[in-house]
Image (cartoon, rainbow, N blue to C red; front, top):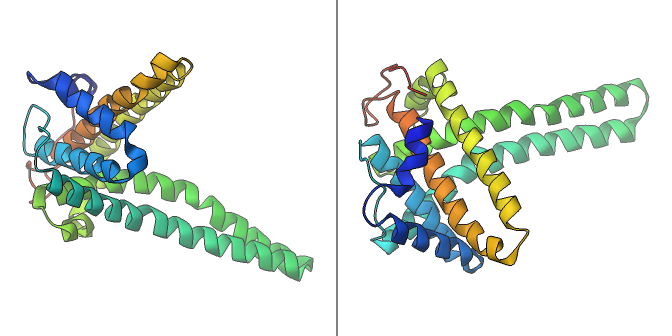
Length: 230
């Protein structure tokens, strides 16, 4: 899976042009719209991977990419920002109430508040597992509602094979982050950062797609329990 993910962005005859376009979009991300185009492209990578395509998608149907990028943003928001905001809000309220109350009762309230905040750690990890699978299912089905098909997602996400498979992108993400930090030291290197970032993100989403596909039949029809190859 790791080898496949790293080689995937360079598959096809037009891979240089593809990476150049992706890097330019990230360079122009301050304009906001390019970010949605980029997110839409990553969603397309997921869908193509699950369907068994061996080469990255081309840059076409730009309007569709924007729409898909907006959908991906909505899914990420629902799965991540809302739960974290709720947990953080409850934790802050309990900590504040405990501090204001004082005494043993206040200490208990503050303790519950701290525990609530600590819950964010496993929640973050659960989000990391859920979001790629939700996006992959949406990419295959072509509908926003497919991202919230919890019956399918639980059969995919809560498997040992999927867990092992989605740990690989963490390795790639850390490596890409180190490379970009080193490159950012010089002006020339800084100009290369968007292109390296695009390459890394495409590789990561390829691996997310493979992880999802290995647990399904290549569609959203249901989990198969197929063992992932790492």
